[in-house]
Length: 167
Image (cartoon, rainbow, N blue to C red; front, side):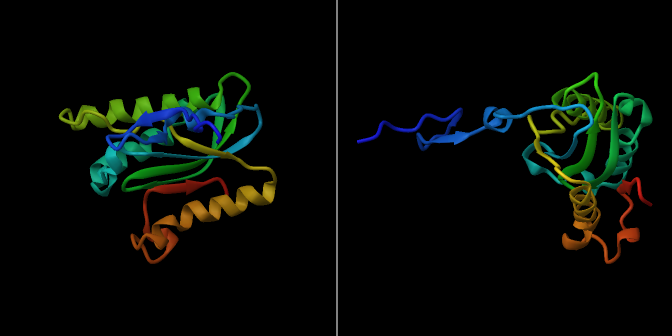
């Protein structure tokens, strides 16, 4: 009989292990010049950005050029409960540092207007390194069509919380 498989994660009330934030970091490698598809979610997947004011604040912050001095944001979309972006890393910071900077800056700016909000973003993020330039364009199409698939808009131009280098 095989010994039980050990996983990094949290124990639930049921006694089972569920991979958590540590599992997301496993195997993560940050390479300068690499483009990553990154996703992070709001706390408890609360649709915080269904509120126009919060979405405007977050959109302005996430696309603020001052946050992108050592990385480049090629495309992004802010959905009611999550954010997707195509990030090209620079040489000075790893992907975790770039995402941490984005999340902390947006949370701080949102709390200036909504001081009652405690946690804005869940811990961690998901990422996928893109291998080819064609994959970047396919990922960008996926991002900007996300609001249409979710029923938030009928056309890409009807949804205000996104951008891409190619527009």
